[in-house]
Length: 345
Image 1 (cartoon, rainbow, N blue to C red):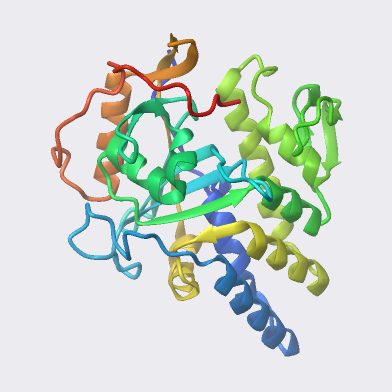
Image 2: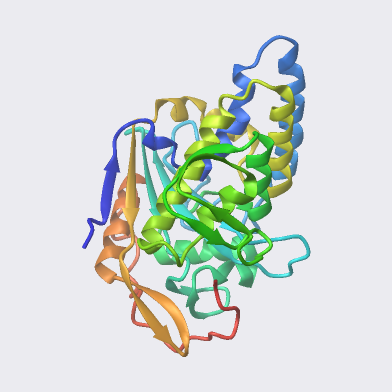
């Protein structure tokens, strides 16, 4: 059994975060100069107006006595990748990462929640796959579900859809990736054999990068391998986007972000994070262990109680919350599950 936590103490590893992509896009304006700055600043504020979407709960979590102050407080972010496409009336979360940011230790702890995890979804009142929470009530339902599972406040969120990943990679001219295994899988329209790749270093288009990150069943490492591939793509996007030398590419990147990315973080708040992002020293990766299960004919991932308890303690410590803030709810003693909603892919 693998250790439930794995530390990554070099700064290169600290870039493995959907959140840092968001911050990077907006911080690009800080390294531009001269006549370029006015144009880029204008486009940045246009993008911020399109991406900022507040939560129905308001500015703060119910688990906070007051809204966080990013100039001094530790805070958390839920990073969500969705399978939402134009015309969809319901979609699911394909990737879900909780990141806690400790300002004092200059440390980020990241917890990946397996998409098939069997959890209580408060908005419907029964247990189901955690990725269904998005279909039941969008980002508000998803945040409520994650807060209920981990017993921590989720202060901010960032969500991006499949089209956004494709558009961002294409906007920066593709990404260089060392493909680790043969790929023959769906494209973003779920066409069979829509993307085929051979192993080796190559420049991937947006469709290819998304397919490489999404593939689940053909990887011998399962979800562990999928997480590694997602980190490869994220790293490649960050490396390419932070080295952009073309205003045209920068404009396209901002357009792709504005059309497909949403967050409740304002541009002002993003700028407040610049000193912290630059000073990041450590990223701690937390894995949730569990086991496969069949319930009412559906596949689920039953979280291990001890692993969940340890993960919650680590996240609370990073947010300087009391570890006994609430009672520990059992995660893998399932009740009767309604599996008629949507079967996750």
